[in-house]
Length: 173
Image (cartoon, rainbow, N blue to C red):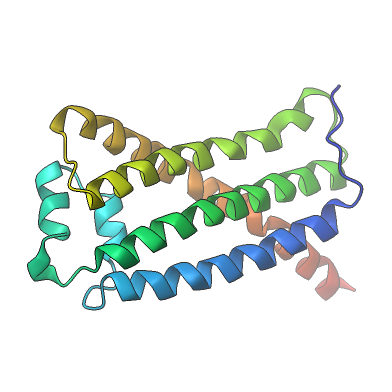
C-alpha cells in the first residue's frame, strides 16, 4: 500500500474547489473577450471535427481576438491543475471516508490524465492561433479532446460528491 501524503484532505479539497472557481471566472472573462459574439466559441473550437472548422472559427470575419484566446488558453493551464486537484482530492476524500484501502488508494491519480490531455489540447490551440493547421497532426488533437471530455463528467461527479454527501449528512441531523 502506498500512502498518499496529505494530512487534511477535507481542507485541501475545499481550497482546491475555491481555486477552481476563481480560475474558472478568469476563463469565462477571457473567453468572452476572445469571442464577444459567440458564447460557445471555446467549446466549438475544442470539439471541431476538421482543421477547416478551426480555420473558419478563428477567421478574422468572426471577430475573434487571438490575443485573448491565447490568454484564455494559458489560463486553462491553471484551470487544468485546479480541476485535476479537485478531482484528485475528492476521490481521496471518498476513499478515506468510506475506508477503502490497498491499491484503490492509487485511484485518485487517474484524474491527472484529463489534465495531461488538456495540456496537449492547449498546445494545439496555441499553434492554431499561430496559423499552424496541419491536417496530419489534427487527428491527435481530435482524439485527445474526445478522451478528455469522456473522462471529465466522471471527474465532475467525483468532484462534487463530497459536497453532496456532506449536505445529505447535515440535512439528516
